[in-house]
View 1 (cartoon, one colour):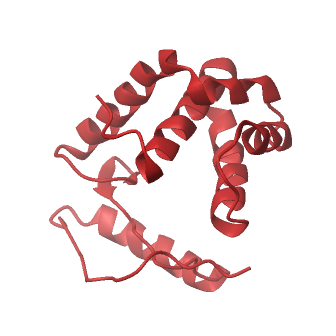
View 2: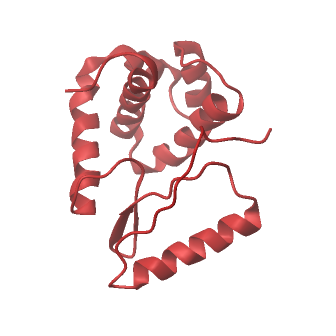
Length: 152
């Protein structure tokens, strides 16, 4: 069962339903463009999660804007739970989100407090590939404070 239906948890649940509906309709290839379009609106434009905003993101992603109705369709909750459990199973332990897998090695993270520039992003990805290729690597963490920041 999902935690309380308010705030960030509720928005995450609703957007999870939309992603599940998009996956159901169009497969894996639909998820990247839709995730990016939603992220742009939520994180960069501070848009509220509304049916209209989601329909716009779906259209931009080449998907049927009617899928925005799945925001409030609990029939997708099971698919969201299954996808979450699959990510936890691939990790081999319980962890937060995101779960990233590279070359068969799965990790919780990365968790970023700001969007890296292109050069930093490339370096980060290279470092993650190195960590994934190191069989003995298990965890790396440092404290962070405050919410993520996004430059306009």
